[in-house]
Length: 292
Image 1 (cartoon, rainbow, N blue to C red):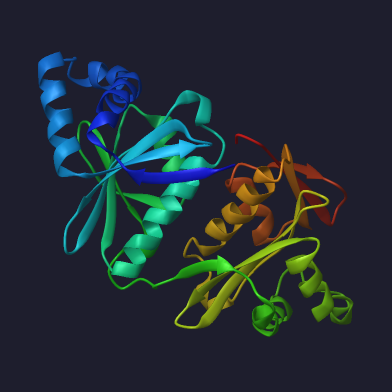
Image 2: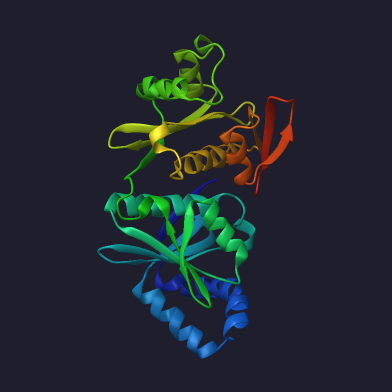
């Protein structure tokens, strides 16, 4: 998938306005009613004042997003995709870029979602956002990794130099423990980086917090592990999303993995919307279809 973003130009205004109406009008009508003149004026004010970005896939207009930027806050005013480009991981990738921008600039990150738009709220929650406050019309949401006092994280493709740290994390886990640690060799890590798939790490202050590997041949997740001190901060969810999106970009229609039944990993994958199948008393298989 050839995904690109660029700053919106005046000539993009009409296409963005048309998409805004399609996506937002049903919700606005349900809450306040639709005042055409007021909506046009409000849209044009936001289009001129905010940083507006056009999203293109293969050169085709796929959607847009808008950011209000201040010294302390990045406010995600709008993220809208054309219906034909939804449920393909594009929104998650755009969100990850905005989160990275927030972390690098050490600014808080916030957005509002209509209370009546349950699908949007569920999407943001899957991507690590939580509701901080609410009113009659909106939920105000923030990303867990972009609040004051939270970690500054970098997500990047894994390299051979990361293998010792990844191996140490894998051997330190207390669930899904290897019965024979010698069976997972450094060469296997190298093979999955260069030949069989791709890996990603989350890094904080030069320390590897967790990693994830995608197996391209079998369209599966070969590994997803976190250092214990970094658990519970939404990092594993973001690593998993990087791997899943990459496998879908390679043409896979579904992604699979297996884990030990009754573990925290078992619960984690179910909460991410994967379909669970019990293989036996000790193992469970999870499947995620494209578009989920």
